[in-house]
Amino acid sequence: MAAAACADADAPTGEPAFATPTAATTPETSPAPTLELTPTPAPPPVPTLAPTAIPAVPEADFHAYPFTLGVASGDPTDTSVILWTRLLTAPGQEELPGGDHEVLWELATSDSFSSVVAAGLASAPAQHGHSVHVDVGDLRPDTWYAYRFRVGSYTSGTGRTRTFPSPDSSPTALKFAFSSCQHYQHGYYAAHRHLAADGLDAFVWLGDYIYERGPLKKIFDRARLHDGPEAVTLADYRARYAQYKRDADLQAHHASHPWIVTWDDHEVDGNYAGDLSQNNDDPEVFLTRRAAGYQAWYEHMPVRLDPPDGADMQFYRSLRWGDLAEFFVLDTRQHRDHPPTDGDFISLGDLTDTKLALRTLSPGALDPSRQVLGNSQQQWLVASMTASTSVWNVLAQSVLMQGFSTLLGQEPPLVIIDGWDGYMGNRNVLLSELSQAGVENIVVLTGDLHMSIAGDVRIDPYDDSSPVVAAEFVSSSISSALGRITTRASPTALEANSQMRFIDTRRGYVVCELSRETFTAVYMALEDVQDPQSGVSEAARIPVIAGHPGLA
Ligand code: FE
Ligand code: CA
Image: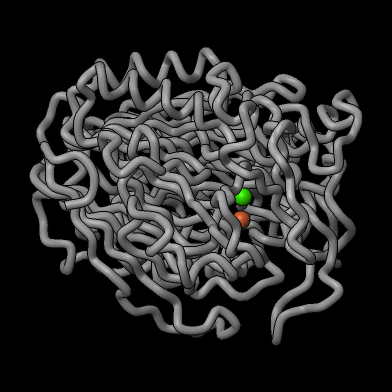
């Protein structure tokens, strides 16, 4: 990871040239970011408060625009943020020479870059696909910045990012959004275009950034096709990320505010669990594939993490927004035990894309030693949440926690064992520990199901008298289509699941508006995922009240 800022971020910076949509200001005064997502000529020399702090722009030994995947930022603290890009020229253009490259990065208080407060050189190593991760430190808390990269005569588009408020401050508001699942072949990214203009402080991504399979045989009306076959090698995964990241709406969203990113299964292989692949490959063979998927994920994400060590990646982490909210970012795939095999798996005709189990016939699912997070992550989570002094404790994770009896005319009810329902004993232990530790105001953010759900997380989801420990908001997908099982189950989901309060099967995302008293989830639904210019509309507004577990 590259070094921190070399310039003096504490120098007087004057008024920022754009509004700062934080607790202290009104969000409606925040303009949409001015983005430059097309190649621009090198700007004139930038006047700065500390001119010697900006190194010379490294020379380029290529003649094609290298910032075709855009820019991004992520994992902010109160004094630092990760800046990201990856050098890659457009298909059909001159390729980058194979060795390591170097870029200049600049961070300023306005989009004009008239006041650069930090700058430095960062490496774009060949072994990491010429990706750049800069950890810029010594910044001011609770402050917006503009950033960009330069090499030779080429300048990247401008991104905007921000630091979070200091952990010992007491902010009164936070506005972030979350979503997941952007299958490129299922539709367009109008949702990202709206999210880019929403005046958010941050965005939380809950997995399925890419999908690993090859081109669909039967494509959706007007939808796009994957280039290349199912991703297995590092080169395959890199190419898939590059295809997704060339989308202008996705680039605009990354460039508009910092992201907090977790992953789910499709960044490697559908429904994988630890070293178990979807097709029961030899674990050694699958772990080689997992290593490739993890490395490509790291190369394309603005995360404050070290690169993976083979098939292993230190992943879970937490971020604080003053004392108002703490985000616990979880990995529900890497350390997960294999799904239960002792249930009566049933075939439902063509419904074979997700494994189901008869709930009451699966002692494996009830065995508390079979875990989703693994020992060390679960112990870290319980200890960190127990020690938390934040008003809101937010779990950013991928798979459904509140339970989903899908009925489908079966008795006893069926559950989808790829979520926490496949690990009921483990869920019971984790939630009981959090409950006994007195952790309050837990809000679980979830993706994966391609539908919107809001409900209560009970220690036993299927027992109405079981204590409520948390609220769970499930976002729909940016573009991925509803699965066949959830399509069949959704009409009866509310009546079959007393813990659920709301469902909606349209594509979309959730905007979260936090105060010290309420956490309001605003569900936004996309009109038509096949229309790149689609509008969105509010589908529901669901609050959680501080001091009251679960939905209000
Ligand atoms: Fe998905
Ligand atoms: Ca998934």
